[in-house]
Length: 113
Length: 109
Image (cartoon, rainbow over the protein chains, first blue to last red):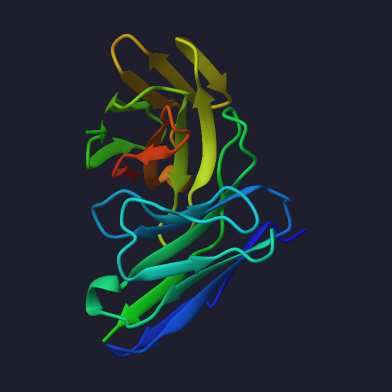
């Protein structure tokens, strides 16, 4: 039972390159989230999904795209990476019940040169 | 706008007690969460409060006052492994989690 798995764990990109971050869950949770975490700032929501085939914008969606073709997978894409996107990216899942916490993957550390 | 405030950093001594405060202004309220995050790791769930009062869980307790928009996390018998950041988050009326910036807790021997 792996929970929430993010790949890759580390990546270095050059400005303008593209890449996709994968989040996979075996918890059967409906809700999935992509956050970024920067020093001195709280977790900021990029995009989220309330179920298979759905996506919605969060607080900081610009420069990112997402897809949720299967319930267990949530992909985050950077089409043309910029240095401002250097960050730690966390995926989280949620049951949808308010007394239940979000569960996080181990994070992806992304550096854009 | 929505806002959650926590102290940036706190220092405490091993074996002592520390209280980490969190004040919030959000669009609606469906509960408040505390998470612990060790450096370089993912946040992990500590506690959930939705009603006023104190919830105790071992060495950790969390308090909520909805009328004051205020919560605190109380850590007793501090251990070196408690050195971490502590994140306060509120579930708003749209069932989105609004996050504070976190409080870095430094434990000294």
